[in-house]
Image (cartoon, one colour):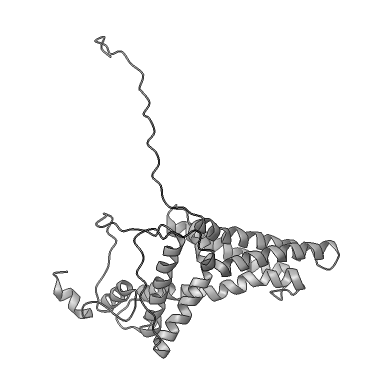
Length: 278
């Protein structure tokens, strides 16, 4: 912080967003500064210990990111390299996935309940494009994560769709119409009060609708009203969606981190040394 010649170009902290760290970093990059990965741990922070706290934190992150996107779109900022533009833009537009998630969840429900196909295409044409897309996505996750598990992150990416939608709408209202966004500081202690079911009501409604749709689709199939192939594919789709959304229930029931009890150490066997000692 004493190197004022580096801080002054951004005066000294970007205040256009509630995620000032990302906004400041992007401005530094536009001024020609470079960032590198440092492998040593220099500071430790507290991670959310309950779902209510986590939702508060993720909403603020998403709101701030969308503020930067609407005020200083990286695609038109001078000084950024092509890679930097792409990286910042991918971070920002990813929160728009909340709207796509609604379509993704509703599509199998509409088919199973009403027989309306979500995509007007022959099965071969559809799967010839879908399967390679899904496979390349998983390969990309594997390469980028370098062996680390990414399934939990993929679950939260879809399961938090109401947060992403709220972030986009509130950030747009703030930037375009001057509505107060507020700054919700992440609580540093666990928030008690039982599972916050009211905060995940949209996800619970989606889970219930998917279950009802699967049952309805199977009934339609056995009574001759639904095509067997399409029904089974969409039921599998529903099961996959339920598997993803189940993480939000697990998070709501999470009781917090508890340190594992120390286990008694096992005594090592006594081995005689060449000198006869133990």
